[in-house]
Image 1 (cartoon, rainbow, N blue to C red):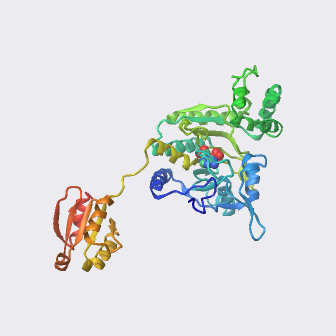
Image 2: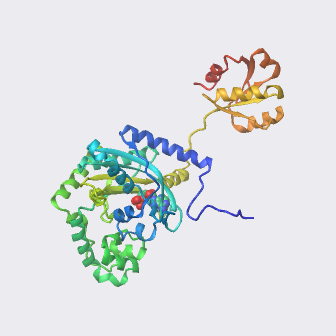
Image 3: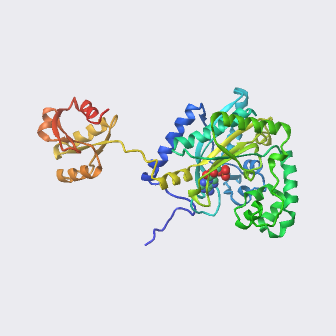
Length: 428
Ligand code: AMP
């Protein structure tokens, strides 16, 4: 019989075995982020709906179709966060971080929520890890961000990533480019789907985000509908944005970070400016984006702060975990453990000994007061490397039996020397 309750559509339970991989992913990431000098920030999982509407753009898919928007009992208009850059920038302003230091390097990790159609790699609750540098427009910050982005993937064993790179200029660049794109697409207007036809009016750049195969064929020129090639945003950059773009590329070259210029990379959100980047893994199928980011020089001003540039990225941890699972990677070897077996008369002593040893070792103990034979079976099944037996007579003498479960070798050791003996046997 099916259980009465199931996790809501698009959400999942992560069980202990899978979480080992997640914890490995998280701990590798924490190491890299600490070495780059980033500080962790945790913001609420829900914010005023307005915050997201303002920063993501009213016409964006996230705001129009994917927001978990709700009224609380006090009639406040709230939403579960679909991403975290807006929350980080809200916190940056709320705590006056700009007045404390010129540049802030921050990172976050946690669940995000989008009401999309669930499929492999796309969930309604998913986790992201992300980083932001707030306070500088310098291209060096973009380069550091992309280096950090690549190095996180490297720490997870993705050595072979091609970063896709573009510049989306300034709002003025995008207005000019949008006009050029509209003009270019005008002849094929009737062949576009309803969404894209609508976007042709409201925000033609978003058409480049399409997943529709017919539209992709039109855009790439493969369908033969358009005889002139797609205009490139890079050709519309003003002199400052062009210099910024050149400097970012030079910085990446100097670090030996490989990238491909992707003229179709426009990112879904309105607050981006200049640098945009993304990485994909084809093995994920349709939902292939592992992460992406870019510069958002207009965001903090849009939230009512003084103009403050920023650059950041976010990476989808569910997808990283999926790829690692497909490759059979990312599961750390379990800590070798110690199993303690007791007689009826030494059970309490065994529980106390286990508690003491757990300050240092991974210790298993039978809590069901089963017979010695059952405990031996459990020890064998547990995968423990060492077995400590509290026999009644030995314990009274201040001794225990220590058995190597791998070799079967067994000897008596004193209670006082046990911790040192365990350390030696575990090769510490
Ligand atoms: P975005 O802010 O949309 O660029 O998302 C950044 C990253 O988060 C993407 O590259 C994905 O890896 C991940 N992501 C976004 N939406 C979802 C989702 N619905 N389910 C799982 N991962 C997602």
